[in-house]
Image (cartoon, rainbow, N blue to C red; front, top):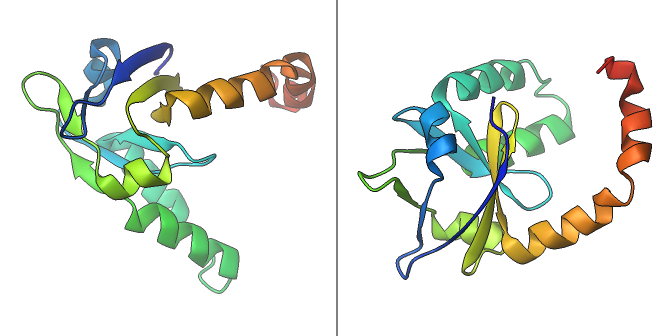
Length: 143
């Protein structure tokens, strides 16, 4: 399970160091793709396979299912960190997530999310004020 919040910066080539605590759980190979709320999702290979299996069950006859599958699969790329723990975030994903320099890695359970630092701060302020309300809505999950 991935947890925590870590700040890093892209280098001049668009590479970023994956925090070591997160890198340990990702293994040698992982998948990076478009996420929700204009962030980037990073899945360990085993979690990506589980997600693929779930998405294969989505009805191809439904427009929203096709659209979601197209966006998540077309954005997906298998990655490996180099010896320094860096990965090159593809330009199309940097543009999607509006990442220019500073990024925030978020441990989000079964996946890691990469946010532009300004987008994360804005999102956090928006949802932080509703923390108790969100918790009440989650009561059905039996936390």
